[in-house]
Length: 268
Image (cartoon, rainbow, N blue to C red; front, side, top):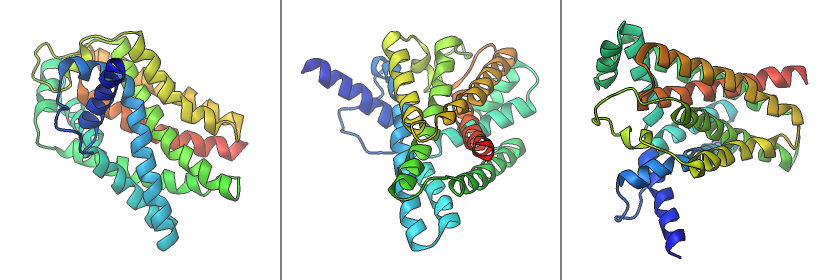
C-alpha cells in the first residue's frame, strides 16, 4: 500500500507539473518525486489527448469538423496552460536571436516574447490546425472504429511527442549550471523505471492504432529523426537541453506526427 501511495503521488506530481488540473493539497514540487515523474510524462499525453478528443467530438457534432479541430486545440492548451507552446516560443527567440550559449540561455530565460517566438507560435498553431483537419478527413475506416481511430490519433500524437521530449533527458545533459529553472529537478537523475515507464506509455497508443493498419508504426521513423536532429542541434549550441528545449521538441514532434500520418495515408 505504501508503494502504491508513493507511485500515486509521483503520478499526481506529474499531473500538477505538466498540466493545470487541480491536485490534492499534499502534492507539491517535491524534487525527488518530480525527478521520477518523467516516467509519466507520456501518460500525461493520454490525458491531454483524451480531453482534446472529447472536445473535438462535442463540437464536431454541434457545429462541424474544422471548428471542432480548433476547439480541440484550445482544450489541449487550456489543460497544459500552454506549457509547451511557451517553451517553443522561448526556443524560437533564443536560438533565433542568440549566437552564443550564454546569449541563447539569457534570451530563453526572458519571459517576454519576441518576434521569432510570436511568428513561430503562429505558424506552429496554423500547422497543427491544418494538418489535424486534413488527417481526420483521411481515415479510411467507418462506423464506431472511425472514432476509435480518431481517439488513438489524438492520444498517440500527445503521448509520442512527449516521449520524444523526455527521451532527451535520458541521453543528454542539462545545459544550465544553476538551479534557477523549475525544470532542473527533472534533469538530475533517472533510473530504468523512468525509461521503461516513459516508453511504455509513449508507444502503447500507437501500437493499438497500428492494429487497424500496421503501416502506421512507420510514423516512428520521422519522429525519431526529428528528435535526433533537435537533440543534436541543442547540443551544438548550448551543450545540452533546457526545459524550453523539451517543450519545443514536444510541439515540433507533435506536428511531425500529424504530417507523417497524412503522408502515410496517401500511399497506403
